[in-house]
Image (cartoon, rainbow, N blue to C red; front, top):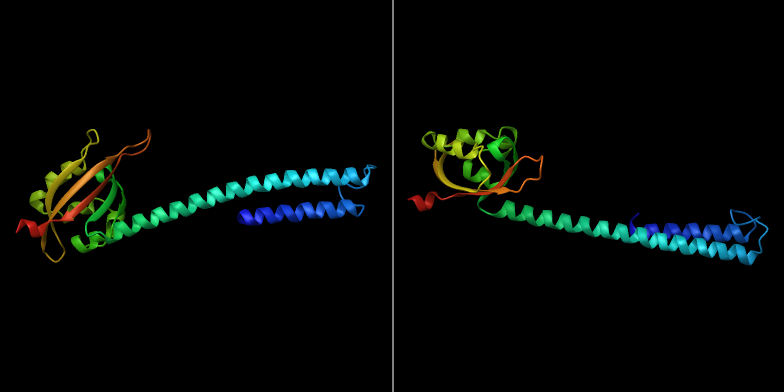
Amino acid sequence: LGPAGAAWANVVLASTVLWYGSHGSGSVAGTGEPLVTQVLHAYIFVAIAAVSSLIIAAVFAERWSATLSLQQSERRLRQIAEHITEVFWIAEAGMERVVFVSRAYERIWGRDVGLLYVNPRSLLDSIHPADREAVQSVLTSHGPPRPFDHEYRIVRPDGAVRHIWDRGFPIPAAPGERQQYVGIAQDVTDRQR
């Protein structure tokens, strides 16, 4: 219904009470009180209903505004993540679960991003064998959460080798929540030549 619908519902309800009260039926009729008293009671009811509808409308308006604001923020973040040339990612510590990976992963790694969601450790399969152990020790570290910054090579399915600069930053975790990292991985192959 929204704020306007809530207000109109209360107007219709109050009008119905007034009409029935003034025509000899309804909850305010037949009380033996003079019509003026009955109408006064109806006006008090309408006033309470109007205040209630304003409160309901304010709550709906606030919720609607918060929802729109959240949708706009999500849209902006999605646009940034999908249009930057670097891979933007969010993952649980230890690479147990990938929360988000931007589509740039497909362009740089040459692999389907969906595979990371199904098997987060498939990332390790793409890392050059000479760099794999060092990367694995950083990604699966069980020490206190701290930022990392490292470079490694990947081997694309077509055999091309790319140099990656990967940075990760711990996201403060609430008690009972799993530690997550947010990061960015950049193809720096051109600056290696």
